[in-house]
Length: 595
Image (cartoon, rainbow, N blue to C red; front, side, top):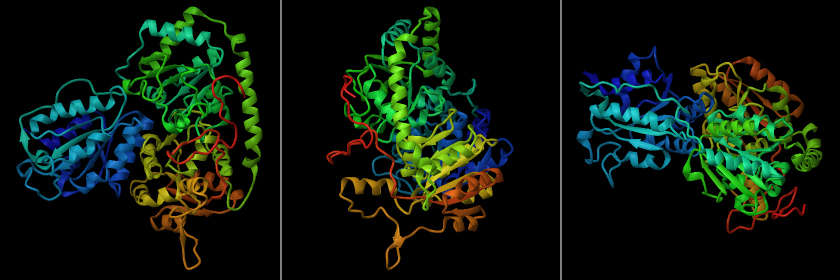
């Protein structure tokens, strides 16, 4: 005979889940008791807010590509998971979200914290839009199947979070039941591949192209296809454009790396996207920010430009652009197939690419001439470019950076040079604040020997300051760099740009004279037991960051950054029906070389 909580705990241990991030509640005390008995095999880490638990699990997966679990109580505790779970879902990150619910004997009676307007114990319907699947077993003997299917669903194909909603009584009720036998679920274990005909056609198109470009996304990162991608780019001399979640899969210091694309992309990436005659997109989904809101001529020129689109998720093939060759396949499997076909054919394309590579080199030169002077300027408050430059100078190539949404992220998307995969964790698809400061904790647990630095906006950090407590309680040595510009800077800039500077609700002011206001983040950190300093001079930032990393303890830098310097737009972003702005550097080019 086994209790439901014992079965769940045994399953997590069998699946080699090292951590469960969770917060106590009356609904999950039965599960907590089972975790107490197994504390030598699985560690419970209890942050001060459930949102942080979700982001920690998300960050852990993005670094390790192994899933952990979260545990929340019924009602508000699990409701606090919604944003973090939605963010993980949109960014293809996986964890098992175990939520507690009311006892089955009280279903539909309206007990404490039951949602029952449309169905009894209906919290699973809250989660369903933001998970790959929600399971709600109502008997102990239903747990083994639900657990196995949860883990398999979570890690198969395109990864994503799965919800296991457990009525309170199942944790303590017993049944004569055992877990289902079988191998543990592993991400990338089931790799789909292209047909031989598709591989041959893709190679034909690549070899015939005079101006090809690669566009890579998170699918390449998850598939761990960096080596194969690099080999293909070098073999065929194809420039590489990267989405933020694909950054580092191709060394961004390589001359063939063009950076990010879209409004906050690099000029060479947008130029290549505009003028390419063929784009091979792998594990990328052409969202509005990486496609200049799908407006022709700003980032891409489909259908005039041919498109080969490879993705493990059939729903992404043709979602935003109709591909000339859609391929449902795992990124690494496909790239290995392409490389094998090229090895068989042994083509010589050196002369075929010379003109295209010369164009790209000229665009890169123009862009560097435009941006370079600003990276060496010392100023007070600190110029944003200086933060990016000093982070690159101080941090090793394997350092992990985490980001919220915000103006600070826009600067790093445009100018950061990631040299290895899984070194840049972004709040991208759902763009949730709080992800950066929180996911850093999970990333550090996944990679304890690597420095983890959260570049956090002042607004985003103020949403989850309790991450400081968790870092101290569990000795997780994360460094937070608070990008303190006294504003919701990205949204304030939209007001300035699209509404004639009529700012309201986006800058932080206080006092009778409306002076810029923020809490003293360094004092806040010290109150939580975290070492911290305030940096107001650009000359001091690099040394402060180096010291914080070497300290190997929780550390916070409150860095005052100039809010009036904006990233130069090289594409566009449309918020219909508001008129959009033209690029600051570069211009719209419809297909046909008229640059």
